[in-house]
Image (tube, rainbow, N blue to C red):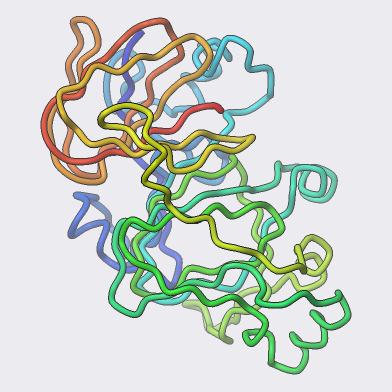
Length: 316
């Protein structure tokens, strides 16, 4: 089956910057490029296909025509399972939380959102918020928001290049300024903002908050960070970053290695550094930093030649 090279959907959120243009070869007419949705079949931002029979068409059109066989032979849900993106935080993101599947489907007609972050780069002193630093009740949580002491409850974590965080649905979190991230998440776009620094959008309006829903879905116990473990070697060039009920994410070092793929799951590849070629059978595609590919589920092998690093994601 054909390897698909995908063109990302783009988002110009007010906290974005220019790193994805200047460092990851993204072309845009936007003043700020906050996110690129690299592999996405979500209605709020669908990837386009850049090669092959489906060139110029939406990724969702391909999936509809091909059916779930290209996702995995046992996959039986009604939508593509994950969404992969770059995030360039030039400024702080809002303090936010995402619901689980049960709440998301019943209240928003969308799945919940568990996600993971791989820190591609971070300015010295950069930090993010990850969960709470002490357990509180819903009443105490709501009172802290009302009184403006909410940030005092958050677990503030300084970050560096190579750090990994696993953010389960219900975890209060926010990416801080100066951080560039690759994210793999459930295919959802539900975000409940708790606090947004009283910022205003281009029309002079403060962005909507969702405090009541956030209180309903938040995990109010103490959260611990999920740190990268160098012992998670899968092969000589692959290390597992996170494996959850929703996705399996690995980081690869390009070293002219042959990789296996099977009918159980598709694989996605995003090049986070370097350049080279990806080959499957007689097909060969060149890549450079910032490129993303979808490999449909199948029994086969492929080779990645060149230099650099990539993120691979698939079904768990």
